[in-house]
Length: 379
Ligand code: SAH
Image 1 (cartoon, rainbow, N blue to C red):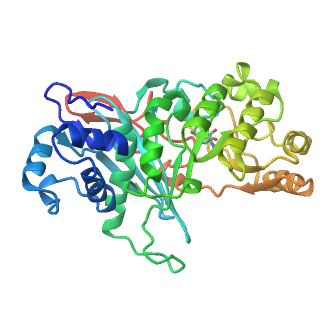
Image 2: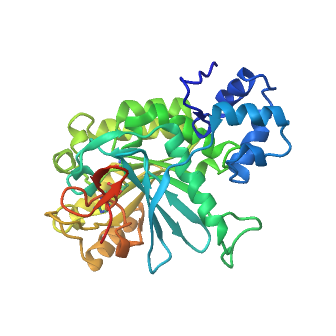
């Protein structure tokens, strides 16, 4: 695989999965196996300065400094929730910003990252949808989020009481931030490989989760290319309702979507697919709808994750009451479908599901360089 160093722009090594990095290292006159050493510095130790990578030959380091860089998005703002959740607003380039969220728990630490600036899918209950679509993130920008968060978190990380020896702050990565990851498959796949590579972040495949609104052809492609956990935004038991909430359903209805999910598990030896289901009062939270879900999912390796709706300005939806959500879950459990209720985290800093970058049109603006852009900041 040839890697071109485009013009005078230094190549960002965070964008290269191992074979591409080996090719690059070879192309600048070193042995391809040096790529592994380089990865250990970059991902194992969070090092970005080539001169600090002391077990690499001096002239190799000089060549790297000449034509390569390790560059993550820059932090514009950090917010910390009362519950320990942290949200970063990141500058991707002069005009674009994205967000990522870290959710610490007793036995794990989950980083929720973005795959696009904005989103084109227009789900009616999601605030990211309201800002429209700006662009795909590059592999380096996707990997750079995890790289940056690991570095930031490791500075003051105190392992929780139940932590396993050597546990790092990020044990799980979920692509559940801004964007539809399967609409940016070309850049997402190499990033997923870097997350799970032993010389990359070395995160177990079961602890990397890609969430999709249901791009069926891309689910088949993903099954061929990588092995990670799959989450699917179901949100409704019937096509009529799902098409209203998740418009891509008009193109790829529930039956097709579920077939793709079971195929994915067969290909991957996966345990189960997690179906996300946002709880909207009076819309999709009735016991009869739980029973319709049972008909769809019973007997299949499926788990339902019920997400209390997180409201945002201008939305017509309301969150289902706690009692309705529990009743819905109990109905599912009683009929043999696994279901859990997602605990809402970080809502005091607008870091909960569907709230990322939701304040674009009418809210805070932040100056980045010479341009003023709308960003998802709570002021
Ligand atoms: N585009 C991908 C991943 C991003 S969203 C997808 O659709 O799966 C991660 C999850 O949060 C999805 O299940 C999404 O439907 C859900 N979500 C979006 N807006 C929400 C809101 N306002 N409240 C609760 N969950 C929401």
